[in-house]
Amino acid sequence: VSTPSSPPNTPELWFTERDLEQNVGFSVRIRRHLHSEQSPLQRIDIYDTYAHGRMMTLDGLVMATERDEFIYHEMMAHVPLFSHPDPKQMLIIGGGDGGTLREVLRHPRVARCVMVEIDRAVVEASRRFLPTLASGLDDARAEILFEDGISYVQNAADGAFDVILIDCTDPVGPAEGLFQLPFYRQCLRVLGADGILCQQTESPLYMPHLIRDVHAALATAGFEITRSNQAHCVSYPSGWWSFTLGSKALDPACDFRREDAAKRGFATKYYNERLHAGCFMLPTMVSELIASASSADRENESCA
Ligand code: SAM
Image (cartoon, rainbow, N blue to C red; front, side, top):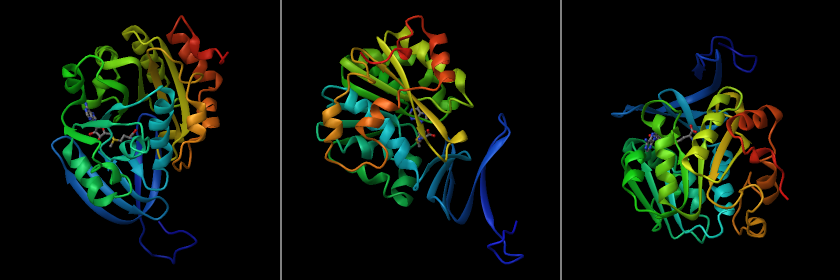
């Protein structure tokens, strides 16, 4: 393909993430293909792109690009951490690129963050090619384990963690069970009294049933409050992303540490205390989906 900005016959390399269910694609122009490997679990590629800096894909699906990863990682970490009264013991499931860990470690209250990633090769590729994401991996508070997050949680002690962040791939293959009731029951057990869980729940436009199913499963597991929020994750399918939180006691939309969030003492590019409240104000179609999953319908209530 040649464009008006390139001379005729100049070859161009493009990467396209193809979604054959939705019949859409997300394309970025590639400067160089830096790395490709097949781990026992998945194919890992790193590209240098013109518009988005370096980009990691797993099995051809975009996981992170240097240009917009802050949006997903700030929302995954700071909303639940500022919603918990005193987050000290943290657990990340997945998250092998390191972006969520980096954000978690910005909170000085965090004493320990265990990250359980099923595929060591993802962490190694990130260390080598995505140093701005991987910067927290060697922090003294970080404990990186390579195993299945489902069995890790099954074997963890009651009340061991304050917050669990599930930063995983799509709900297929090894990540499938991370979106299901038996796993959420175990998460409830290993969370302390004010425990909060945050699960990435994909695009509300392309996978609406997932938000509904995760709400229903979290409520059935025993989470008192379930809430979803949204963010603009430009390089994920549709660019419109959701996170679903389950909380044992406090409502993440209303009871969060607003003043601490305002005086957070570290730089963010997306998250702030106003957005924390605002991201839970959902479009009608998402509110209706969530209402269809729960009789309590708390999600549609505003804060008192
Ligand atoms: N932000 C990304 C997204 O939403 O597409 C997720 C990025 S992170 C690289 C996802 C990680 O979850 C992958 O490295 C994958 O190996 C890991 N993962 C998938 N299933 C897992 C499981 N059962 N236990 C632990 N890690 C898992």
